[in-house]
Length: 188
Ligand code: SF4
Image (cartoon, rainbow, N blue to C red; front, top):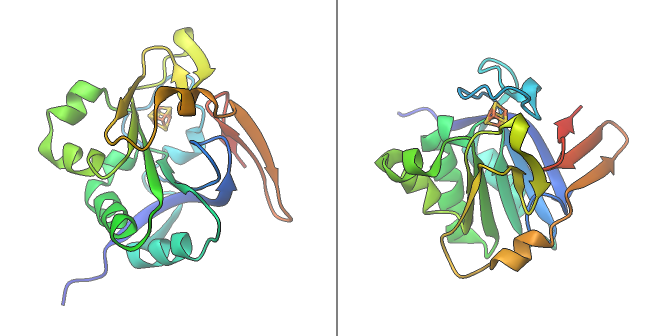
């Protein structure tokens, strides 16, 4: 029997207002092959770090959260785990009405030219693509830097919806302090 499909996860956050329109669950995956200088989340780069979680368990976690608009996949690099991310998003699409935002450090030309990556991207409403370039830092409308590009793959959102997303937020709970968003996001 085939073992359950798993996703290497850096962090999970149930409610965020700075990772896409509305209140969103956020899945930061663990592991990134891109290694941008000035990466906002260096702790998510190591491919051996984080926790390995069954895709079905991540889906159950997403579905258990009430009153959210959608789910955001960030990282780390989600497209370094295309099979698991596609399986998760396919099941989110099939079983919820949540919107999907996907951040990737790959340029859009690379995504669009690679069928396995495009299969993942098509499951999102919005893809924010491109590596972070410190010299072009922007921190606005989901763009960490000005070289990154936004791709609206469905009509669920328009650019003004993305421009209205806060640049940064601080989330406090009893265990963690999380500073997140496109302006110097870090997770501790
Ligand atoms: S793609 Fe994202 S996680 Fe990867 S190095 Fe660049 S900023 Fe960091």
